[in-house]
Image 1 (cartoon, rainbow, N blue to C red):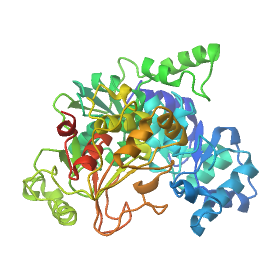
Image 2 (cartoon, rainbow, N blue to C red; image 1 turned 180 degrees about the vertical axis):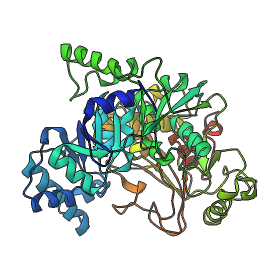
Image 3 (cartoon, one colour; image 1 turned 60 degrees about the vertical axis):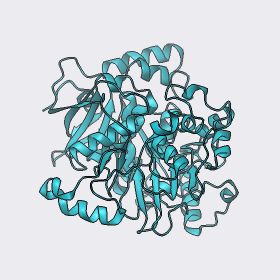
Length: 485
């Protein structure tokens, strides 16, 4: 059993008591809610005449169903169901006194983008949300878990959840990411190796030189997809990179309070002699941009690497591989590179942050991977290929405004991207942004199961923002290094 890890320390600090069934009652430091999974929970509170126990620890935004086209954000929304969900959320947060970043608020956006960038997520916290990608918040040294509707009710009414402690697997990433490889390529590589169920029963602690070198936005992408590998949560130790990111955020402590908080944050770091239940080592030196060829994130290869023959895979994976390849239309033995593209989608809680769009803009402007700081001051060198529908959806309005102010949004518009407002959008197609027929989409999102992006005939290739953008330029799945050389 693990001992002395950040996970162990955060758990003990938030443990209220052991429950009769063996689970622990944990206090939740930050509860994030949105329009899709919270209305039912508020309804349960009303049935029991209960109030929200800690409204000051609860923060709401709207993301899943909101239109991303500016003209379609006027109220009431054209989609009656979306309007009902949003109106219900507005009523609930107003009655409960919960902070809400709604439409028209320049902080509105995807829950897992908004909370870190506002300084709401901080090291040592427990974070819960009715969304599986709550693992994202581990990037700041928190323990974030997705919860269901009944647990949302529990957190709203008591501030606590009943939870089972998991094993801790240390993911040691040696070497360094180079050039156009990113945290997205790293996590897809890890899931490919361990499988979509490889993390069941575990939380992941990411460490090693390649992880320490990531900025916080890269760490957010890494932790975000922990759940896609079956892990309950994923986290990175807080360090100077974390503290530099938090300093000056609207809801982060200031001055002496920040210094005091930093001592607390340092104290939750895993001990040097911490014990882990398992250690997995990954070498980042030889990674190339990664894409998926199938219908789950583990069915992935390097973009120039041949798609595997099902017969070459472990026996229990062969039938799923055949079914997936029949759906996506890839050819075993051939690389995914060169596959015709219909749609490119940039955004989501995985890759919808400022650095993601800067990296994508660098591809459009023909810049090198280390020149993302200079993007936005010139016309794009490359434009979206004829026949490709390219959509860019910032993860939050804060992200969008920063990219507008820096000229990066103009690069996307000039290149032929449809530049939108913040929301989950085509990641899960709940707001009308969706694939049609058997379109093939190269997407910076996190899931590629059949029907995830709308049509059940459509195909999704998961990739980094750089690879997705290079694919938009060439009209076929493309290694970003080919476009920028």
